[in-house]
Image 1 (cartoon, rainbow, N blue to C red):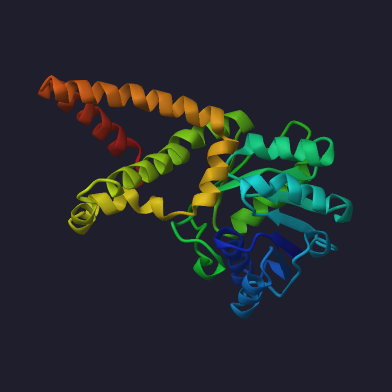
Image 2 (cartoon, one colour):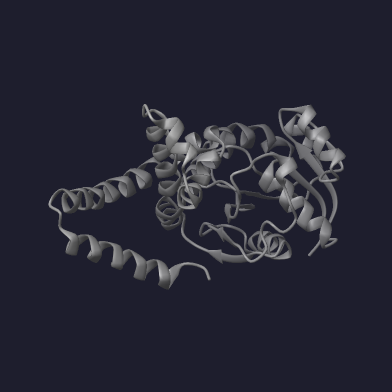
Length: 287
């Protein structure tokens, strides 16, 4: 599959890495970048990630046969409204948003309904770093990308987006919108919230300097994702609010059970909980 002109709105870690991967596989002709900062876009040009840029989404999408929207969740609707009158008739649109229900809602508001050529997508890949300078072509290799097409989504558009991600080295799966949001609330959104909460709580203790000074590998591994972009995670939390609240409530019940076991000096109960967690982790964690 080859894309003659790809427009990436939001040239950061995800958009930049996809552009690099497609270039490495000679799968794209021209890459047009778009974001609010001309300085960051020029950096993307200097790095060889994009060919040219425009800070106006309406101008950037002109003539593009595929448009990737990689902006924060809170900006999705505004971007859809800006590009709507300027898309080529046969252009395919996709996104990388972490909450697909919110993307569908944004499209309905911006387009008056979800266009058949819009294929919602979510690459399950990333690092705690952000920005185009952090992008690299191998980011999606052996990672999963979830597509959440609706019943009326054009089948050819789905295949084009599938081919896009497979060219970048990803395994592509399809999932319903609501199911995606519930699964990601558990596997991605809740862990990020816990990492942020842990670091914030410890940082406000009187002994916080010593706590961080003597933090070992386990602490660094667990809290690494607290270095992610706070604005992006604010938007994700608000966009997937209901599913996240459900997962937080479930976690609070289990945390209370742990607290009660510790208070009661119930070692057997602690071993039971920890052993159950270890079995689940050993069974399902990537090897």
